[in-house]
Amino acid sequence: MMKTIDEQEAERHRAKMAKRKAVQDAEVAGKTIVEKGLLIVNTGPGKGKSTAAFGLALRMLGYGHRVGVVQFIKGAWHSGEQDAFAAFGDRVVWHTMGEGFTWETQDKMRDIAAAEAAWAKAQELLADPSISLVVLDELNIALRYDYLDLDAVVSTLKGRREGLHVVVTGRNAKPALVEAADLVTEMGATKHHFAAGVKAQKGIEF
Image 1 (cartoon, helix red, strand yellow):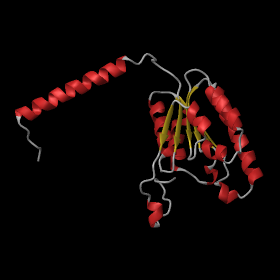
Image 2: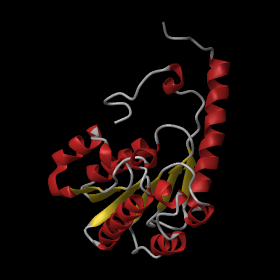
Image 3: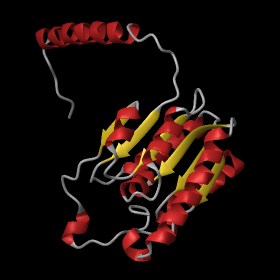
C-alpha cells in the first residue's frame, strides 16, 4: 500500500528538494572540464573490483566505442564475462595473459615473464586510437609483487593519449598509482560468503 502524506509534509519535501537541486546545479555549473580521459583505480579487499571495471566497459560499448582488456593474473580461470564480451566481436579486444594466482604458479620468474608480456600487450592497446577504454585487470597484483617497474608503469599511464580512459583493478594499489589516478574506489569487505565456506561460483566469482 502506498504511504499517504499530508500537504504540509509534501510542501516541506518540495522545499527541501528545491534547495538540494539548487546546490547540485551550482556544483555542476562550477565544473569547467567537459571531457577528460580518466585513470581509474578499483582497489581494496572487497569483492567487485573487476566487476565494476567490466560494467564500465559495457557502458562504453553501449555508446558504440571499442574496449581493450588485459588480464594480468587470472589466466587460469575461464570467465563468464569474457564469453559475454565475445558477442561484441572486434569491438572488444581481450587478452588473458596471466598464468594464475602467484600461489598457484610458485615460479617468480615465470610470473615476471607473464606480467611483462601482459604489459607489452597493454601498451599496444593504450596506443590504439580506436580504443576508448582499456581495462588492466589485476595490474595492481603485478605491481604489488614487483613483477613490473612501478615508475615506468605509472609514467606510461599518466602520459596516456588524450581522451583515453584506463581502469586498473586489484587490491593493494601502490601509493604512486593512487596519487596519479583521477578516481580511486576502495572496495570494502564487510562480509563475504567465502568465510562461511561457500566456494567460488560461476556467474558470481568468474
